[in-house]
Length: 164
Image 1: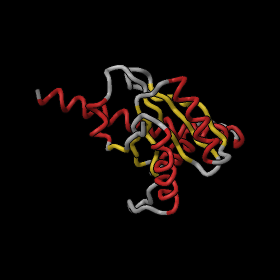
Image 2: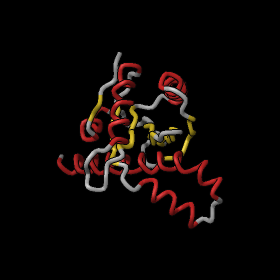
Image 3: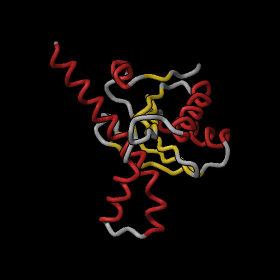
Image 4: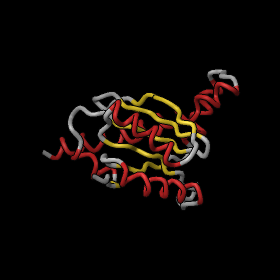
């Protein structure tokens, strides 16, 4: 069964009360993967997939999906600062287009502008070595992306609860 690409507002009502989400930061050399807690309050870095080729990357991702059983995947969409889409956003859309027929959970894009900058700044403030930053930045960027989506889902839930 092929997955679908949803807007975050359309994902919210489809989620069980307790279900983890995955966050992905799709880099050219690595894919940072983060996971939320079952209550979807906090995102944590999970693992870094070293990119080789699409089929192998998706195989690794599939193993993680089978193990952790997330309800959906939030993928960072690298928009330009003016909101337009450049080559990196197009590459991300292409990856997702090829991924959707191979998985059975929904995918949501999340604007990832400045996520890597914010994570790098945090690591610099923590006096993390250049080598260690390279190991952490994509996983932490995935968690940063996922946390933004989790916060939005919480806001949607609060707004819906207030409308009753």
